[in-house]
Amino acid sequence: MLSRLQEKQIKILTETRLLSFENNTALLERKDDTKITIAADNLIVSIGSEPENNLLPELEKRIDQIIVIGDAKSPGNLGSGLRDATEAALAI
Image 1 (cartoon, rainbow, N blue to C red):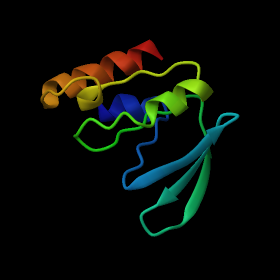
Image 2 (tube, one colour; image 1 turned 180 degrees about the vertical axis):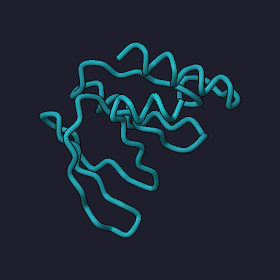
Image 3 (cartoon, rainbow, N blue to C red; image 1 turned 60 degrees about the horizontal axis):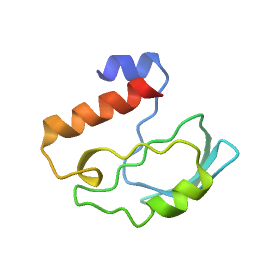
Image 4 (tube, one colour; image 1 turned 30 degrees about the horizontal axis):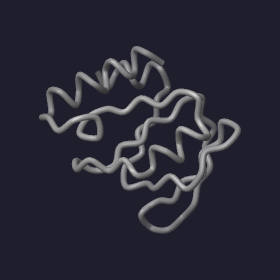
């Protein structure tokens, strides 16, 4: 799976917080407080393992397609989270 993500030039950033996403540009903040900007056609945000959906209404106002996956969709296990992530990736 990781090789397929690499082939598609998909970047996985951990310990990174999304500050804003406008005009296909994401402003991110790393754990060491440095800020970076990346261009992105699509953005997948994963926030912990507990449902945390209070960001969803604000994102829905700004982004055309939102796909909620994993525990944010419904509590589950690693298998259901990976299945949701795979389905989301294929839908993009």
